[in-house]
Image (cartoon, rainbow, N blue to C red; front, side):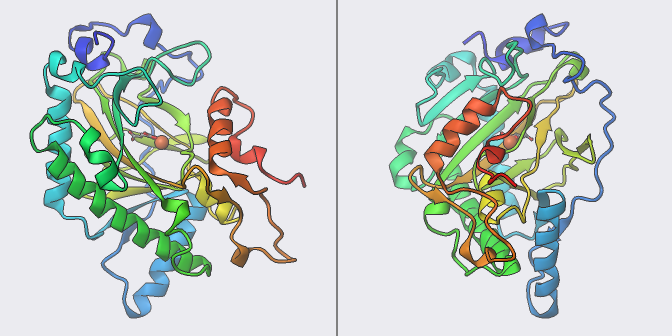
Length: 341
Ligand SMILES: O=C(O)CCC(=O)C(=O)O
Ligand SMILES: [Fe+2]
């Protein structure tokens, strides 16, 4: 347990050597510009003329940035605040309480873990602790969730169901915007839902460390809640910050949306940096296909003029390739399934 960053970092005067990233990867100058271009989309405006405009904004943001933020999204501010407070309370619990949930067994559907296993060959650790569990269907998983803090299952159960509704709504807007039949993503492609709560304690020298390194998410779509700045995307050959907006969700286009959209939408390469004054918690919902689901470009987007760009692949095979490629700076899992030009 002493390896949880949150259990020793308060006393740390300097960054331990096994958390210091090589100069070419570390964030260095933290004054990365905040990217004002990432659209903030108002989901309350979806009637009449506004609808066509909204669909266009969603598709354009998903092509240009692989990311957008949503407001007036239907998940109540109280529920978002309550959930964030609860996770902060979780990470503030005494080490002995958290010990019961800690595991290094990656196959567990619920576990608290730290950055020991990261994606760099030279074994530099990320400055974070995380908790992960499955959320859907709720009745199959809720019994494995923590019992502390006392309201955990009630609050997180409601949050998971509400965020699921929102994600399916956004996926249908993406269908409508791209001209795919509604509900295309609603079944096997979005069958699985998991929650990862990342906790990044304050760091004595944030310019040397990473909360999480640059990556695209392997799933279908990711819905992220943050209340402290730290998320960045790689855009125009540089890292730029994603503004932290109270009560907005960040929507992240992930690998399976890129492949099913036949490359029309792009997955966003992103990372998280830390800061020296305040702990940051991000609540990340991953909507993913079932392991058996076959991923291929949607038929509605494929024609003689627009041939399929990606080979069909079962999601479990894709996931294995993704894990194997995390060490490879020269190619990504998505590229492995591209037809050669
Ligand atoms: O904490 C963040 O802002 C990013 C987390 C993330 O990218 C992930 O968990 O996949
Ligand atoms: Fe991510």
